[in-house]
Image (cartoon, rainbow, N blue to C red):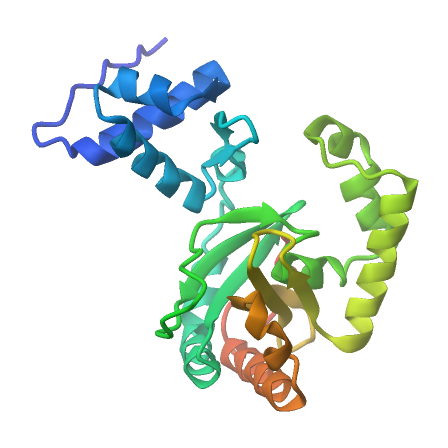
Length: 269
C-alpha cells in the first residue's frame, strides 16, 4: 500500500491563510472553540483571532452560539458538487445578473440547491453604500433562503418528504415535525402560484431577499437567483415594476442557456 508523504511547509507561507485553516482544523477536531482558545493556539491577539473568525462566519465555515462559542458552519460539511455544469451556468447568466443588479441597485446572487442546502455560486454586489455583501461560497438552509425555497417549490411532495421526513433528515438534524412540514408544503404551494419566494430575515437579521428560478428552455429549474437587500427596502422590490424586471431577467437567463450543455434533460441538484 502506498504511503502518504508528509507535507512540507511551503517556502512562502501566507500567515493569515494558514491561521484560518488552523482554526478550521480546531473546530473539526475539538467541536467548539472560543476566541481566547484560538488566540492562544495561533499565538495572536484576541482581536486578530476575532477578525479571522468573522471571515469564517461570513463565508459559512463557522457559526457562533449565544454563549460565544464557535463551531463548524454548514460550508465546512458541504460536499463538492462534482460537476462542471455550474461553471457553464455561471458564465451564461452572469451578464444578466450584472444588468439586473445595476438596474435595481441591489446585490444579486446565483444559487443552486444541493439536498437541503442552498449554495451561493456567485454574487454581483451593489455599489449602493448600504447594501448586502458578497455571499459567494455561502451555504444556507434551502427552506429559509429565498433562492432555496423557490427551488424546493418545484419538487414533488414525495421529494419534500424524503428531504425533511426521511431517515437522512433525522440523521442530519433537518427533520420537521408534522406541523412544520405542513407549513413548508403550504409555503411551497404559495411560492409556485406567485412565481417567487421571499426571505424576511430568516437567514440573517436585517436582510431580506426575493428568489426567482432560473429555468432551462424546456422549463426545468436548474438554479435560482436572489435579489438581496436591507430589509427596510424589501417592500420596494415587491412593487410590480421591480418584479417585472426580475421576471424579464429570468427569461433572459433562459435564452442565455439555449444551446448550452444545460439545454437538455437531466441536470440534478
